Length: 567
Image 1 (cartoon, rainbow, N blue to C red):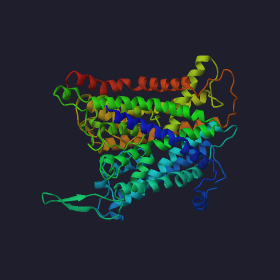
Image 2: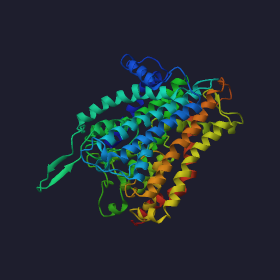
Image 3: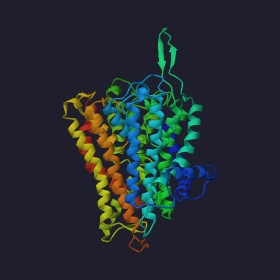
Image 4: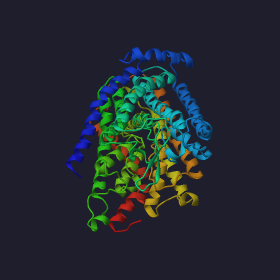
């Protein structure tokens, strides 16, 4: 570990904190329907879109109507991606003449991109045409990210409103999010990435002569436009198989740093949106502090583990940390920081191979996802996931003092607690359930690249990533078989929508309640005690649920490494 490494981490945190109120204030105005500096240009476009879609922007929906609209929206997205992949051989913008994608892989990929998971059981440059990359994947990157954001806003409205039966209009919210937030940032972001050296072309793949006199095909395409929303929308699905470790997806140290910032910036800003909408920005800062404590703890452990390296190599006099699977141009600190960021934020983009991390270094990304990806989390998903844990923590605090718990003026009662627990229990159901099946089902076992605890971790990570809608992987697992494509798709669907529906039910319940003024018995939710309580609840729930599985994987692998055993 080095001083410059810690400086990079500290600078990263400082920039995110500085950007949070700026973007938070702007996003609050957007979702409140207020005028912004982009309104003169975008408001006419917005009105036209409502007219074409037959949307009355003044008509709001109940939580049930909002949720149904969201689900129907995703059915359409699934059909678009599935159709494009199955018939890409007959469609235009296919200079490499890619063939049709198999049914099970098309199913898995379509589910992956509508759920903001972006799990990829394929290599993008060798499987998908330009049309599928743009109209299918990039298009859905915008819409799945916008969906996560507006669902968080709907839940925030539940806390902010009183005695009403509506939480907003899904069609209006998703239009404004895409038009005023995602598109403007991505246009500027794309130009920056092109400046850094990222391809953006519809031209054919390039053939180059090697030093040996042979020929090499270099894949190019509309890369920059996809990478911008891939990072900003915490999607993570790469244009190339090597993802952000590929020089065309991540050309420079500057592009790497900006990509890390873009992964966190909208998720962090939503904490400020929460504070502004409930009328007390300190509430938003408290939630960001909870996320920050968990994030910094993960960074410290992961950086330490990778800088320490493998004891077996150290015994041979090989020092300098664990560089296996890492890009030399990024090094250990940027690789460890990126790994923690991408799994804390439900992004799934990688600039180093998590499968090559040390046992403890690879365990941190795994834990980040298993905690519900509430450490910033996917855009929107992290915010409503964190609020579910806040409800549980407030309930625990209420039990301690023997009174009905309150949060930002709303009484937290049995319905809210039951819905929050239902959403949280979805994760172990899918993660542990499918992992148990996979490690005894012969075709699934045959896909594991490594024996022992590391092979078990490959499978555990796969279902953790898909259920948590992350998309990163331990690359040793061969996931493109029928079993993993189908069960992984089920895990992604359940992990996304079975958490959303209880969260929206909570939004509707809270919006209908009256606001309760604080009293002498109200538990303060803006200070260190509250932050510590929520952090404790998150760690206890995660520990009780997943520690046995972690003990079978990375923990026993680390102990074996200390004992000199390798796999």
